[in-house]
Length: 207
Image (cartoon, rainbow, N blue to C red):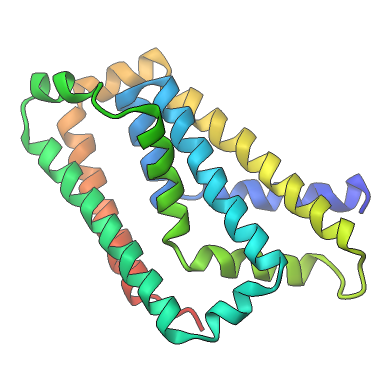
């Protein structure tokens, strides 16, 4: 696939992954509160989860998984539960005084931040549908396997660049300072948005 054919795909990909959702909420919140390193760890976790779903979709296993309603429902419930827990955490942080949050900001390790980013993506059943649809629309049925790898790796590289840029931008000193001033309002907003995301995952129609 030539660069002229690949570039529009990657532009659309950037728009899609940058749109507001659980992953971007977790990334921006962590970058503002926890700093650059934790923000980048969450970003890499999100890309890791996306890579897993890309591999599953590329192997044709996504369609097989979606044909078993119990597997999809289980993943949906786990994902909604995890997002609800993140909403609870944000709500609890919003109710705590600022200095208490500052003392607890350094508790999460980089490994835990990475795992949190990966879990958000891995517990979203729509992610494998997104990859599967993208492969089906973009890649001709008679295309060689290397084209599948080319598109998949290009999208993952774009995801890494986009998510890392967001982590760096939201961890910048002026943004972090604004977050500290309005920390409880931000956490309250994150609680509402994570709660809405949990409800959306729980009630979404995947078929």
